[in-house]
Length: 370
Ligand SMILES: *Cc1c(COP(=O)(O)O)cnc(C)c1O
Image 1: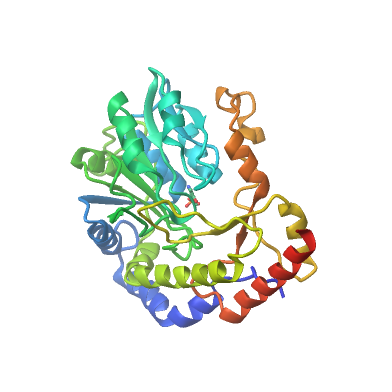
Image 2: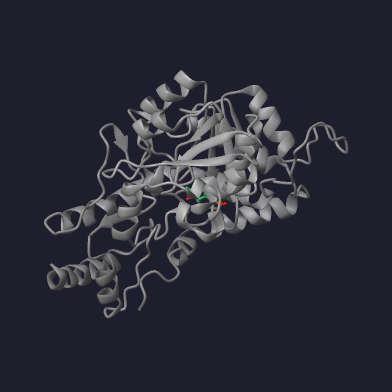
């Protein structure tokens, strides 16, 4: 048995009737593209956050890209982010034609270091993209201060942090815009691709609606470029409407799983997730750290347990970025953490017996490497 196979099977079994009803609702409506389900999901997702506007898009990568473009970011600009993220954060920035600048992380939380951000700003810097990695918010108060001092726009990458809070405030409500992915594994996941951008700004909202729809406001008349076809699919929007009502339950289930890991592993040589003061973590991933990570993963394979590393390669070391100015940087905290982190199975329907089997095997393996 490999415990990472088909993580969503149980969830689909439990929610099947509702998911299929969502599909049937759309197929029967005759409105297959930008219809009532996208509109209602946008209203409901904005309302969940208490923010003015939500624009559904086709995936999280394009959510980041369109958010940047809606704020006027493009060639000649510089955008600061972290290298310790899912590569799409950076692929999206590069897709605007802007130059990427990486800054290091706080080694305890694995999140953007606000002091490193302040030190990296240049006259060309237009925007900062903090990533709420693994499900807890970056230090948004400090990042916001740096942004205000230098006139930078802030785009939050919330792809891993649906429903996360910092000092009571929801992720996605700190910046000028916030980008979400609804990739199936995410805390709020569709049954396929999906994404959205939240913003408080009416003009940004309008720009986003043009950007996702060929640059048009009226049909067949292009108002602005660049532009894309990046619409959220109507079927996925209707599924997301149903699942949004359960978002807080999904988060509670993830927290209960995290609590069990914490309880079982707290007296081992693993470094467990550090929650920054004021943060409510939603545990998109449960990431542990150990200097002998590769040996641990190898020995777990003998127990038929295959664990993920998110992420093994900091983005600035990837071949696709070789030769760019962005790659020419040393990020010691980022590079060290990439060699030591690994993820334990984490999804709301993770069965207790499966989790216990993973814990038991991990404890055995740890006793052989310490
Ligand atoms: C998943 C993810 C994305 C990309 O989302 P897609 O929907 O797969 O395009 C972007 N940023 C982060 C941090 C992610 O985890």
